[in-house]
Amino acid sequence: MAKIPHRLNLTEDQLPKQWYNLRADMKEQPEPMLNPATMKPIKTEELYPIFCEELAAQEMDSTTRYIDIPEEVQEIYKCYRPSPLCRAYTLEKYLDTPARIYYKFEGNNTSGSHKLNSAVPQAYYAKQQGLKGLTTETGAGQWGTALAEACAYFDLPLTVFMVKGSYLQKPYRRSIIQTFGADVIASPSDTTKVGRAILANDPETSGSLGCAISEAIEKATTHEGYRYVLGSVLNQVVLHQSIIGLECKTAMEMLDEYPDVVIGCAGGGSNLGGLIAPFMQDKLLGRANPHFVAVEPASCPSLTRGRYAYDFCDTGKVTPLAKMYTLGSGFIPSANHAGGLRYHGMSPILSKLYHDGYLDEARSVEQTKIFEAATLFAKTETILPAPESSHAIWAAIQEALRCKETGESKCILFGLTGTGYFDMTAYTSFREGTMKDYIPTDEDLQAGFDALPKVEQE
Image (cartoon, rainbow, N blue to C red; front, side, top):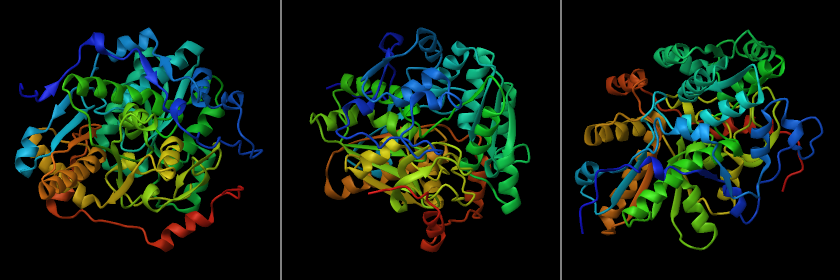
């Protein structure tokens, strides 16, 4: 048998022409989103003031298994897709493991991450609707960068509310967003009513994705012709990100491989949901039984320590309510360096799969351990990974070492969601020994649970 290549690149002709809607094959659907004014299941048209109409339709569609990717979106995808499936031979050798480690590398675009996969269609649908501009939030900056790229392509103005902790830690990420023509505002800010309220309560807050979402929605809903777009959590985003898993499955079939373990970092759930989508379909339909692992920061442990409950998706409590694993919409995580994983809740789709036992396992890990794994990966595989992606790397290493102990030759697949070239402050902190780990206490988390909205829940 010929040796499997280090990198397998599909051709343009093999680029998926449709996204896969995981909800169409779920045994039980996620609970419906609730209108915050009525606490009743929200209707598609009630989302129109926030989202453009096609995205609202995708958000609510739980029956269409495959949704066509518009041709113009496919053409932009071809600038950086298909992305490579890589075999981590050097890491395997270093670990002396019989495991076969693969990773899907999503860093081959200017945003340095998988986020462009959803930014492009979201900007496309906004342009098709004739909107004047968009607003959004960003944590680590990958989503803000990706959407700035997409909006520049479609000539749409964009305002990005960037979590203040990341805004201060990552000035070059901020600069690249501005290079594409978007405005960037540190959140919480004094430019919105909700931002001023948050600052009045805690002037020194480092912010959160929940805060930034509130500000972005407020600006969108108070400016005619603007809409809000989100880079994670939502059903529509998991749908768009399914292109990762679809490409991955095609490539693995070409190699006559199938993963025993599939691992992804977990913040809001977009990359994890996209990576596992076609493999989860196999599990739901009884065709295979891969083991799925979600990895999150110990400082923001929504799956491992959160509550499965209805909650607001933003700190300002203006969004629809979603049934998800949550730490409470007011939870402000410590200013860890994995800014893209600083969200209080988890995708309703992934939350439901985890609650029902299809998403097998969730792990949380401290950031110093993450950067140990990131540094090892950089030295062995020549790619400097983003802190977010490094959560998946850490778990893949743990699985590979377990195979070394047992002698099992498992196939391990993880998502390398992006690069860490704008995260050098974090790498410097780790190298100099000044990086600190923070794990919230039960008392810290209880305050968020106590503030959960009073919705009749199981």
